[in-house]
Amino acid sequence: MAHKFRSGGKYKLTVPENFDWPREPHVYLNLSGSEIIIEKGVTFSSGVYVITHSHHFNKSNWRDLPRIRYKKPTVFKKYCFIGINSIILATCKIIGEYSVIGSGSIVTKNIPPYEMWAGNPAKKIGEVEIVKDKK
Image (tube, rainbow, N blue to C red; front, side):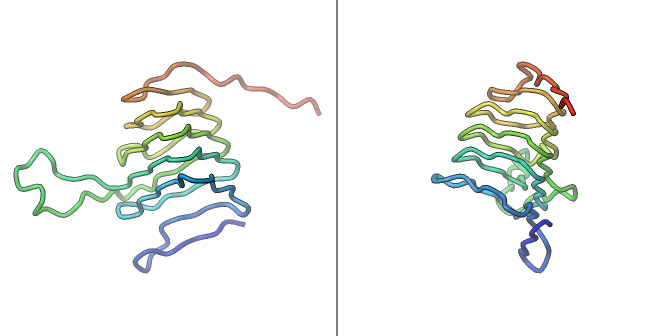
């Protein structure tokens, strides 16, 4: 069963039951732009930032304009791993299942499943081996 948290009257954060929040420094989940959905088995390291809005920085009056809010939620698919002090920007809407984000990375676009990404901006550096259970 998932837990849903409200912000401004709407459900903005969905986390699975028994979600393991990291120790200090805590994860910063900015819910001012879109919803964040965290699926089972997701691991956040300390100091991760998830940003769900942007600004009109290409316009000189950007301070007077409303924030850019995105309709699509930011989704962390099952068993993905986000390394320490990584930043997930609003332009990234999906972190694929079993994917790995290296420490200190700045993620600007969607991450496919079973891939390792790192850097600023984050780029693909490898793949996660798919291991089949012997049952």
